[in-house]
Amino acid sequence: MKKVWQVVIVDIHPTSMLGTKLILEEQQDLLVRGMTSTGTEGLELVKIHQPDLILMDYRLPEGQADPYITQMKNASMHSHVIILTDEDNVKLFRHLMGLGASGMLSKQASPSQLIHLISGLREGCVSIPISWLTSTEWAQPSDSPGEEFLVELTETENFIMERIVQGVTYDKIASEINVSRRSIDNYLRKIYVKLDVSSRAQAIERYALYARQAKTLS
Image (cartoon, rainbow, N blue to C red; front, side, top):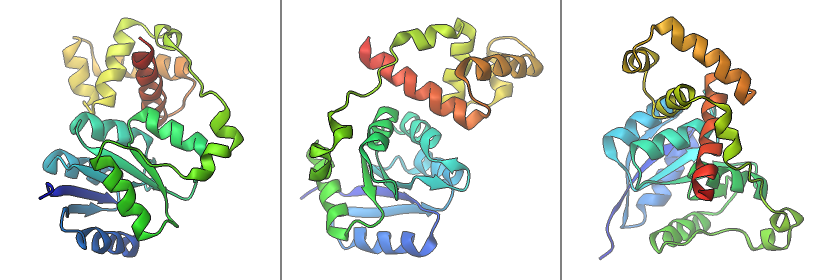
């Protein structure tokens, strides 16, 4: 008998979330342990339940799901993350996979397509639409910024960003490197300039993406 996979659902639409739960629990090997409409609460559910599968809407009240993909993977490394989105394209798929997602599914997909994607993950396979294989985007090489992106940050700046991606508070980071809370704010201003971003969420997204790519290339 297959292991029962524990599932957490993060969806901004309550009706859709309940429908997804019913679809999943028609399968004897899937059990929904928690549901929420926000990325912040979703991260807490992941920390508590350590689920095998996370189904998450790409558009959350806090913004795009990108930073939560990374934080959830850090909190539960074995979890598979499937992103549900209206933007069904190769470029977004590659971006999400670079952040640590295991799959992407259109919100217009049928229940059988969702179950097929999950079944593939159980066997160690990632499913994609056949139409992508003939698209011009699929033929194009993905961007590979390389390690030079990360060397723009100092050792301390890299440490701060690594801890932020892990969800550590600014006050704790300050105590870890023996500086004031205000110094962390000063570091962050410099980091934002170097990463060409204007918010914490954007910084997490950009840093996590390039850090993963650099690790892959090393």
